[in-house]
Amino acid sequence: MDLGLTGKQVCITGGSVGIGLAVARRFAEEGADVAILARDKERAENEAKRIEQDFQVKALGISCDVTKPEEIDAAAAHIEATFGGIDILINNAGTGSEETVMEATDERWYYYMDLHLMAAIRLTRALVPFMRKRGGGAIIQTASICAKQPLWYEPIYNTTKAALLMFSKCLSNELVSDNIRVNTISPGLVLTPDWQKTAGILSEKEGTTPEAYLDGIAKENAPIGRFSAPEEIAHLYAFLASDRASYVVGSNYYIDGGWLRVSE
Ligand code: NDP
Image (cartoon, rainbow, N blue to C red; front, side, top):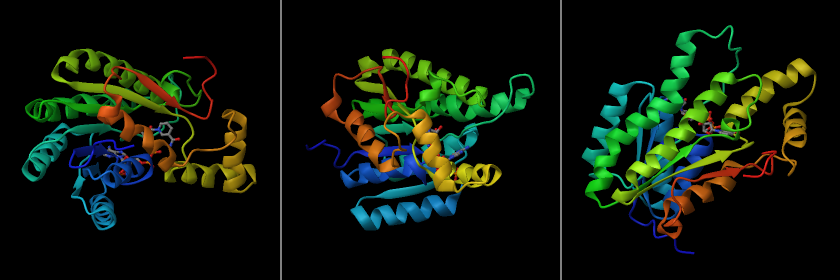
C-alpha cells in the first residue's frame, strides 16, 4: 500500500532510540524527511546520519530537552530554517516513573507534566503554524496503556499520560478544521533499551536473567505472551499519519498484545 508519505517532513521527539527511532526509520523508509529531537546530541546526530545513508532522505538530529520551552523554540526554528516547515509531529519523548503519591515532591510531578504533557502542548503551538501554511498535517502522541490501566508503582507516569490522552482529544477537535488530524497511540509492552535496563537491574535482585525476567513480565501481562519490537508498532504511526487514515480523528489506538483488560 502506498501511504503517500514520500517528501513529507516529520518531527519525532525521543526519536534517537526505542519506539521513536523505529518510527523515524519507518517514515524514512516511506521516503519522508525526519527531524529527531532528543537530549543526547551525538546519539541523535548519529542516528540521523544512519537514516540518511539507509533511506536517502534528509534527516536532522537535533539536541532538545523537551521539558525546556526555550529548547523547543530553538528546535522549531532549526526545523523551519532547514525544512521550511513540517507536515507531521510525533510527540513521543517520555519515560516511566517510580514513586508513591505521598512521597513524590511537586518538582517530580512538574517534571513529568513538562515531559509528557507540556512538551506536546508547546511543540504543537510551535509547529502547527507551519502545518497550517502547508494546508494540513497530522499529529500523533505516544501515550501508554497506563493512561487507562495504571501500573501501581508509577502514579505520576499514569496520570501524566492520561492528561496527554485528553489533551490529544481536545486538540483533535480544535485542529480538524485546519485539515490537521490528531490521534494517540497507546502501546503496551515494547522491548526498548529502557526495558532492557530495568530488566538488568531487577533480574539481578530476583536472582534470574534479564531474558527470563522480561519473559515473565510478558507472560504475566500480555495475553500474546511476549513484548512487541519497536518496529512492529511503528507501522501504525505511519498509517495513522498518512492520508490512508483520512477519516481517523481524535482516536486512541491500543497496541498491546491484548493487555488492556476491558473492551475499548
Ligand atoms: P526510550 O527510553 O527507549 O527512549 C526515549 C527517547 O526519548 C530517547 O530518544 C530519549 O533521548 C528521549 N527523551 C527522554 N527524555 C527526553 C527529554 N527530556 N527531552 C527530549 N528527549 C527525551 O523510550 P521508549 O522508546 O520505550 O518510549 C518512548 C515513548 O513510548 C515514551 O513516551 C514512553 O512512555 C512510551 N511508551 C513506552 C512503552 C514501552 O514498553 N517501551 C509502553 C508504552 C508507552 P535522550 O535520552 O537523548 O533525551
